[in-house]
Length: 127
Image (cartoon, rainbow, N blue to C red):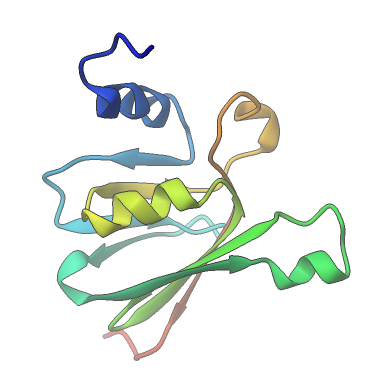
């Protein structure tokens, strides 16, 4: 039996302790920390869609992260590789994903969501 009156609060605790992402219900942008050590702010007003699929790299490398999450904005596509990415899908659906970045697996061993790699590709030229 769940004695927690607010089950959502329990899931918030795990995201607070996760170095891969943060959430905030008042954000207007997603801060993407790409693996090339650059940081980008992408406005949720330009969010188009997200797609989660099995990572195609698994066919060639059994140690590859099992999932791929593509987050598409009007001017950029963000690609995340990792595991447990369904929880990020739910946070994106509410426009509450504050930031996302990769972290070494050893720092996230006990957590359900792990982002192993973050890449960003711009679909339009930036000024």
